[in-house]
Image (cartoon, rainbow, N blue to C red):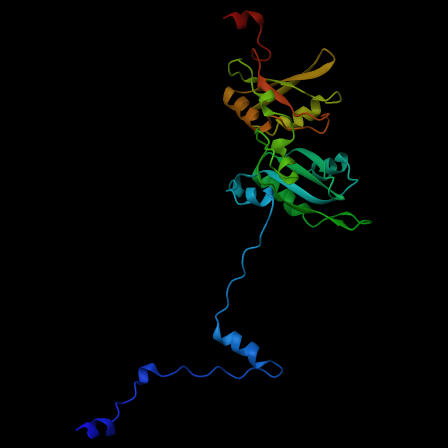
Length: 274
């Protein structure tokens, strides 16, 4: 019986058959390279070891792109002028303001352009992205939506220059622009204007806000100030939230300071007492 057991080996298990050999390597390829290719599945490359605050901040959630209305413009030559950036965007519908910045670590400059709404910003981006700005120096514009809109926020010391140059950080500590204790009013008081600021420039900026009515400029202690009237307090509040701290072309370095006026523009004294 023992002989019968050893003379009849068990049937082969076809389900555990060895896999077919890999196809031969193409001509000119080493067998070692071919073996590595077939024996081990490919592994995804490791993530690049980015160093610096920029990539730390880039990992943070960004605002939805459909809410952005500010453009970031790269590819400008180092000797670009603010007037050139202004002329580049001034004729686009919805244009509000622009600002030019240069980096000491690069021979190129950067700029930001603010628009009244996202469709206007996208239209300007589509028309200017890839445009040759300086033929002699072969400078081509790279235009995209900025990381954030112009909002008042405290700048961070660990931000890299790209973040610091965003419109939200154009001005100094935004607490300086906080509205005073005046109650909400349809009329806004505007200060921190440049000496060459004109009424037409303010009209161009504030007319992009809903409910805009008119602008009236005055000269206070040798510095221009303005009153901007809106149809209601909701409109004036929206204008504060949108334009607080924005730097105009005529500005000398600081952004506009917006606050509610003490009373509505054009209201007579007897009406104020009622």
